[in-house]
Length: 133
Image (tube, rainbow, N blue to C red; front, side, top):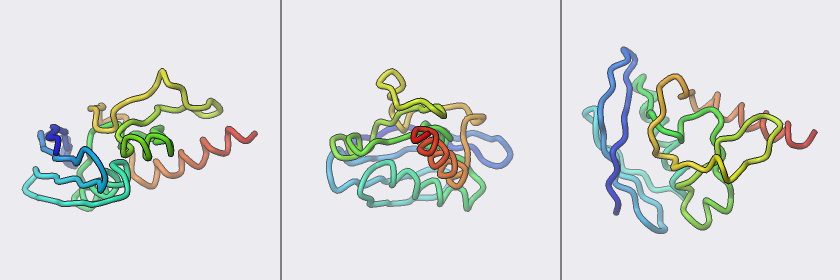
């Protein structure tokens, strides 16, 4: 297991450092503790596990301030298969993913870049469609 620190922001804008233990290989497990909760998640990759964690946090009106919560993050099949989805691309409408924009999904981002899971999924669909045109 690898221990990392993440930041969670509540509905009042108060930020708190929290901790995640993540597995280094399959099966992908994530153990979160902070903001007076503990959550254990098992998923097919770390990006999906982070999305499940975000669902729990959204129910508590909290946001996970990391790249996995950005509107424009894309985790490729290759990243999921080779690294458990730990790396993702920051993408733009009309442009394919670029190695230059590869980031750690648990890397910190400002609250202004964080969106809901639903908004993220809508952007992903729009981005995929923009590449077909």
